[in-house]
Length: 495
Image 1 (cartoon, rainbow, N blue to C red):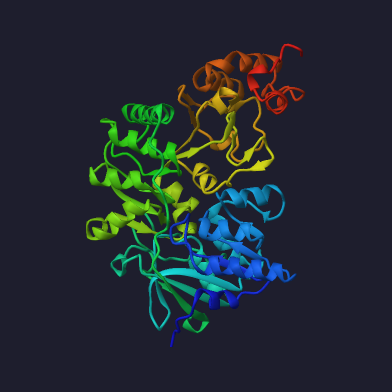
Image 2: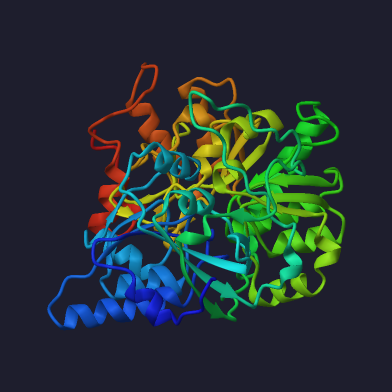
């Protein structure tokens, strides 16, 4: 019989050097109280002069309840595959935590392949759990189906905030591993191929910790003029592709990243009268998706998590029968699966931290050295998209940084995976263009006026080469920012 235990007792089963896997994807579905108790234990062990650190596998970013408290308690040895917590980021960039970044679709299968350390304990947030080991997950799935299968022990956080009426929201499917893998039978976003619950060996369950807590997500800040313009540019571009019969008249499923730009893009797609109601096959379902479902602009959304603000989540749970046939949540190796992305013909829209004039994208590193969050799922989707779009504001820090530079300071997505670049300045369609043509198109259409002449000057330095880089100057804009704090002071005329 499954037993109820306290969070402190649950934490007592975890030892220094253990490797843990956590449910969820973003803060949605991530444990909340066992991790707080674990941070308390780590602090107590450190105060008594004993070591206490764990390794962490998650679906994606988590929350202050997990990444925040554990990083502050100096309780993390290594972490993968994605994070967005400020304290975690500081520890990673100070090399206090060994962080390895990776494509989100790869982690679960590589855990099964045995590439990494074995998982000692999986901590799973659940809306319900049965004596025979059937677990009804909450608002996020992530890697937990695989992690629960291979973990030695399991701890359940039974969170009463999520009603049991969400049964049927999830589609839990683990593909076979090579050489026995077959196609994943998803041919449209609403197809289901797995089970409504996660099934585990009940003998592995240490105990159940009861909670009643929301995920703690706040709404994104409203769109400003720049993000609204980026969103409008994306919608206008896709409407033009419809008019030119480059996209089927019925449209194609959308994958959209996370954040203010993604919300602005979805809002613009819904407001554009030339774009028909569409479906989504994506990672994260945000507040903007709910609004567009209510107006009929989004017909269905497949994702890995319902990453809704607490108020919106409460509304959705209260009216879940109205949304029951509009959502499905899957493990991330299915939501981000390249095979399915290619089959469905996804239009993918992701955010760049930095782009260069030849179409390469940096999604992760500030000035090439400081980790921001991680690559996430952008690579899973972009490489396999029908059309891959990357967006970013043209400048940052009040114009002192150009988001478009001669050469990216860190490469996450090469020019081969980037079909369209869009800023608030305009649209650069890079398909079928040589490196020089890509550079001309990006400078003319996407670069802020303060930096256009500077980048034209750089391009001329390269002379007659296939990719006209000047290696002695390609990072001059970055160096100028590090020296003076303003990329606009860069001078290519000295060369």
